Image (cartoon, rainbow, N blue to C red; front, side, top):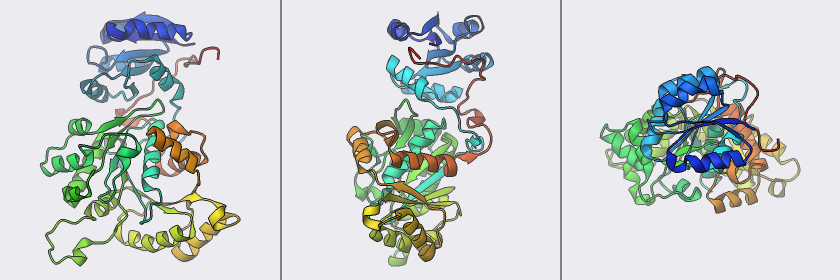
Amino acid sequence: MARIAFAVPIAYEDSLVAEAQANGHDVVARCGSAGELASLLGATRPDVAVTSAAERYLTPQLLAEADREGVRLVAIVDTDSDRRNALTVGLHEVVDRAEWSQIEGMLLATPAPAPGVAAPRAGRGIVIAVWGPAGSPGRTSLAITIAAELASAGTTVALADVDTYSGSIAPTLGLLDEAPGFAAACRLAGADALTNAELERIGQRYSSPQGSFWVLTGIGRPSRWPELSADRVRTALEQCREWVDYTVVDTGFNLENDEEISSDVFAPRRNAATLQALRSADHIVAVGSADPVGLSRFLRAHVDLIDTIVTDRITVVMNRLRASVIGAAPSVQVAQSLERFGGVTDAVFVPNDPAAFDAALLRGATLLDSSARSPARAAIGALVRERLLAPGGDQRQGGRRRRPRQRRDAALTPRGG
């Protein structure tokens, strides 16, 4: 049982209070503004304060007072202006609906930061590009799962679809793609008009109690690829660094330099978006399919990847690992082939789990939300914790998202726990 204070609009205050009490929690305050709640935190000593994200109910002063008193804040977002206010204040523990199940799910599911794991340096986010050769090795599924795992670790995340051949993040997550978010970001970047507020306007939100993240959807029609020029992609990703802690980019497969096969050196290049995303990335996740055909494709294309990129931070992921196509000890056999023919060591292996990915696709959800116990999800979660999250320090530094100092052990406990 937790002690909870509320500062929310009267339209749904009664229903939230009733639900909280029905689930065994103690409501210690019902306030009409951020100032009133801030003045009562010391006297009522709640464990959690649930507020609206509107300016009337959420202010920097309230967040500072909650930090001083060791009170956890969770904000309810009703409008885009509410979300902007929460981001401006520096609170990213938000839910998108005023329903108690969503709020309690957030409080129960949000994990403590992993030891020795940190957000990127303050004020400049990290770009992670997910690339793989032709043949559908699982680039999009891996990019989505990486974004979900990063968000569940308490960081702010954007997932960008930069594939100019077959962008598929939006349909995979059940999002609308009539107005492609990343193409819009590129157009604004070309006009020198891209800001954090514009990114929030054109971005869509994947909401989850495990950890929500922004999505910049891809182009719905391949013919729109000229909108994603190299300069625009570079500028858009630079602005994303100022917007969120981590930007996960789902790239295309093709690494050909179009100018080598075109007589017009000023013509737009279809592969420019992928090439620029890879060159702008701080870390690249190179994914291949762990079967004889997929392994051969990966090894051939990996040579071109090395010639293309700037960073030396590459993590190789071999997806859909299974003994049925490799034989006994498949991870050992694939690892030996990678080292012998590609000089690749220390690869990450993701077990084959088509049922889990099918379930996620059916729901339009992430693997973390639909099949949290999947061995594939466990392998990708370990990849994120051990290879992708920046090492050292406090995970929520830089004011992007703060956890209050722990005042006592009375964290939220399920009813009867």
